[in-house]
Image (cartoon, rainbow, N blue to C red; front, side, top):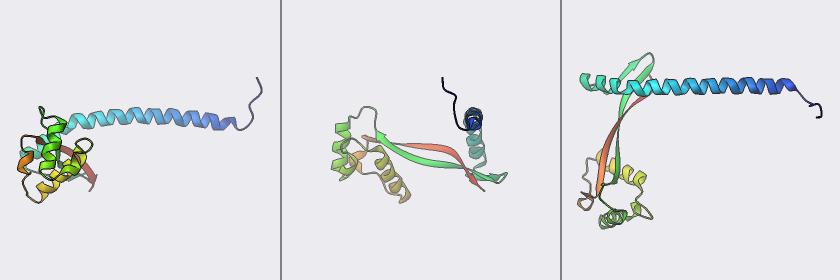
Amino acid sequence: MPKPTGDSRAIKTYAKLDNERRALEDKLKKVKAKIEATEPRVMDFFQKLGLDRLTVSGVTVYVQRQLWAGREEDVTHEQAAAALKKAKLGEYAAPRVNTQSLSAYIRELDENEEEMPKALKGIIKVSEVFKVRTRKG
């Protein structure tokens, strides 16, 4: 086997950095799991005190509410598409029900305190999801 040429220190540095990266990724997974396990307690705290945000240690912790739209359990794509077209919202139905865009539309209705079109009731379900989020305080 021919003797390698070049800087063998680069190989050692690369291997060392790769080991460090792997260790940090493992640590990050553990931290994320702890955050996830703590989230229900944070939600409970906010709910009991009627808060929607609190700044601690330079971080604002808050609860984010999001609406998500999708088909009701027993509704087929074809039925949902027909209801969307009937409500003049066909752009959300082709080629499949576009739940991302439909959810954005539902959020907009909610923001403007408008009702979902009657043609969608019983066809499209809207779920409320609450998540704990943070930002620099």
